[in-house]
Length: 84
Image 1 (cartoon, one colour):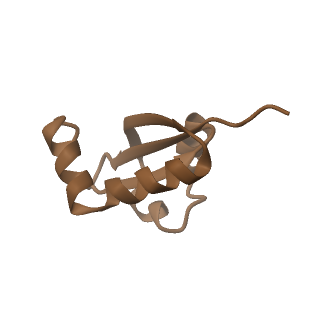
Image 2 (cartoon, rainbow, N blue to C red):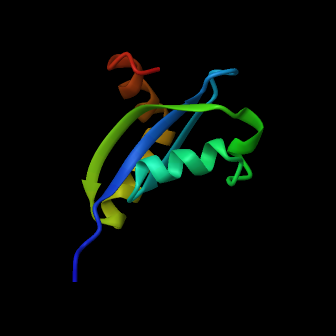
Image 3 (cartoon, rainbow, N blue to C red):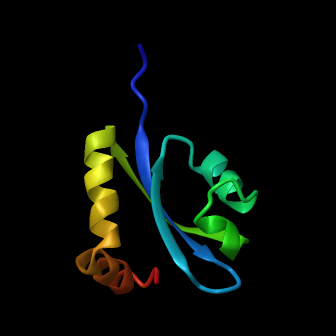
């Protein structure tokens, strides 16, 4: 059985500059879902653009990294990389 590769991603609302951090195995499909209004939280801020992807591997490690990016330290990391 093939093991899925998980990635953490950061998207930004083009209209409001709001940031959203998530994880998925198919980033393009997930971005399309965000832009189609299929996510309750992000539907108010359509359209979204992908600004950062980090391949992690397994879901547990990816969840940890996602949580990190939602923290103050993770946001600081993204600012240092000039992503935010």
